Image (cartoon, rainbow, N blue to C red):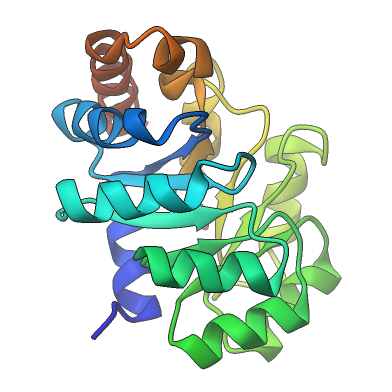
Amino acid sequence: MGLTGAEVVKRIAAARILPVVVLERAEDAAPLARALVDGGLPVAEVTFRTAAAAESLRRIRAEVPDMLLGAGTVLTGEQLDMAAEAGAQFIVTPGFNPAIVTAAQALGLPIVPGINNPTGVEQAMSFGLEAVKFFPAEPSGGVPFLKALTGPYPAMRFVPTGGIGAANLANYLALPAVLACGGSWMVDAKLIREGRFDEISRLTAEAVALARTA
């Protein structure tokens, strides 16, 4: 039995940061997941931006089972099926595709679709969703825009992603409607490529400490 949408939202909210991971090699998946857990973040969104995504999800699910594991940049039904088969516990999309949302719900997979306007929020509400990704956050107007967007929709929760790092993380987390912030600064592709997992753990621990003070 998979996690419910409410359970996924609760665990993302507890983490306050959702690492957005791009893996070029599946063999890096489990070491990266352990580095995140060691740094205090037992959650990750592994994106379908590379051919290694599905196998990376599979390895993390098998070797680091306590991690809350999401599949991101899911654009097609085929990718959705691959994510489900590989053990993803929730889905994240950059935009709002009703077909993908419907298919994810049919599979019993919680989904956090991307929006950056009121229409997107109302679409999400019409599908019974309680959380959306605000993407791309900084180019879409950042904190001021998101603050204005939350006003008419007090029940919706947001995961801003895109252009967020250590310098502006606290500004987003200060908004009551923000569950967590998506970011990749602690899981930089160069660090993964070079196998610098201790550095990833250090950056993750710094990010977690920063989020706790926000």
